[in-house]
Image (cartoon, rainbow over all chains, first blue to last red; front, side, top):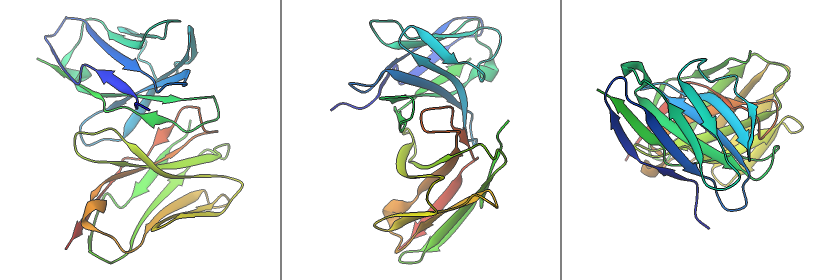
Length: 113
Length: 112
């Protein structure tokens, strides 16, 4: 059973460009979570989604960031007009239900030049 | 909102010794406390978790204790091995499956 998959693993963008990060949950999991990890820091919750629904976006910056989890396909975290402060590792986690353990993917490391 | 404090930030032990990492949380509504291990360049891996209806849980060399009154929980690793070297994160949530609030991590180094 494949784990949580994220791609790309590394992404380099110039300031002002858009970044799209993809997350495929584990088979049978319908809940997806996005976290951001700055260097030397712990993980910060961003957003929690189920298929076609945003359940909790209390950790998402109000501007430039959006997330979706469509009926078909992976979850997408989109960052518009990236700035240097967006450089971080972005982790996706998935769980089978809303009261279950979260399993993390390997992360996407975003570098903004 | 919830705040999780984790200590120490770094911990060095000799192989075979025990290691203890402590966390405190602020939100009395938190009921789920997982611990994750993160190796360099990888995603966090769950090693053990505990829910508020129990005070202690063990899995081989790893144990977690929870004191809900004092709002603190601890990770205990016995008979440490070099492969235990990693960054360990504690977290708290109202329940499993909701937003995890993480501590800042403890870098554990086990020397042989």
